[in-house]
Length: 289
Ligand code: AMP
Ligand code: MN
Ligand code: MN
Ligand code: MN
Image 1 (cartoon, rainbow, N blue to C red):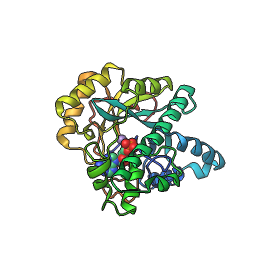
Image 2 (cartoon, rainbow, N blue to C red):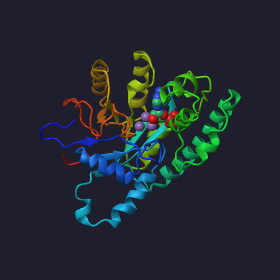
Image 3 (cartoon, rainbow, N blue to C red):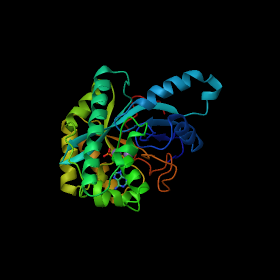
Image 4 (cartoon, rainbow, N blue to C red):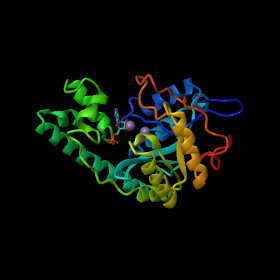
């Protein structure tokens, strides 16, 4: 949310290189229309949007570029901790760092294999032919969101939420328990690429307060830099508690819409509650605001 004297900064968003709907340029233009001045594109296990934009922006002349947000190179890495699939956002990363590039390549291969296992499980439940549809997609990082969409299109479930709840979510019948790299490895690879590691949307992992506290303790211990403190629909009580946890551990704060699609009526570019002033923002050292 924009407030006086501050620039509008959105540090979490997706393009069609992962499970977002828009191509990178369309996302930038939409964000600009909503007044976003600094945007981190953070696709799941993909940096393709950054390579494409580097090319596209170099083809534009200076005046064309004026209305577009400043781009902060980012990524959202899937990893394992707390017996869950945890997301760590890397911000201000070097997208050409060879350690990170090799890691992301491996993640994409694991994602393909994992989606294949999901499709096998669905077939056993009588839902046949998802893989063929998924193979037609151009996304670099195949996600369960892609699979859920196919399941809706095939008429196997009425909507995305039910695809997750009944079948592909953690307690669903076709869930595949994935051994992602440990959270520490995700933090290390982000640091190797010169970035800051942010624990994404801490309230969305279906953890009890006690379990979430342990996860945050662990994240701080392994050298994580920031907690995502504000995002759409965050419960105010959770927001206050997370802010206390950040202060307790000397972690910075981050913010972002986690924008995926204009069709998601509950997520608007750059819209989330303001960060508490007492917490140093993650962008402090690399953005002059
Ligand atoms: P993956 O990274 O392959 O596990 O896919 C996770 C993505 O699926 C998330 O980033 C969301 O975009 C989407 N997702 C996760 N849970 C749900 C849900 N319950 N309903 C709708 N979409 C979901
Ligand atoms: Mn997603
Ligand atoms: Mn996420
Ligand atoms: Mn995300």
